[in-house]
Image (cartoon, rainbow, N blue to C red; front, side, top):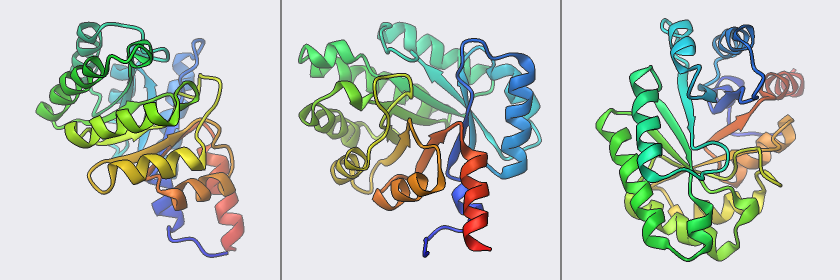
Length: 228
């Protein structure tokens, strides 16, 4: 087996995720400890526990990522901007927000662009990475292309396939399509259903530069077994 990333490099592409409604403090403590131990890039959490995780990771290179408008995207632009601002104030250095899918479905492309512009502007002003979640399971290929074309103009850090809470997660076809549209100007994050090394490897080879998963430890453990 050949793979272009080392174990350390693959780990550093993983966003270690805990987005469950019933997550407890001890779960976030464990998440942060694991992220540090395995060298994951980020802990992906809802905005409420950002301050806790930021404090736990203050001496670690691991980033703190807040999920905004999560998982439905059905809050106003103003509400999302407030949530982004609050998360950054509490220590988030990465933001993953869900687009307003209803507005996209209604053909209101200007709304999607304005939403992206306002959120990305807040992130850029604070030197915070931004990720735009399309939730591809609900979109046509044409709609995916529209959002990626907007992203190419607005320049968030990433476009992202999924929340992991929809009817489907990342697919290789979607990662390839998104990367084809955004090119080198915007990165692609694959999330949802990435539960083993084979899938992670395939997503990276398709163009994903970040992986969102709660199975990061399993993925890295499997990779270590492959290279023994």
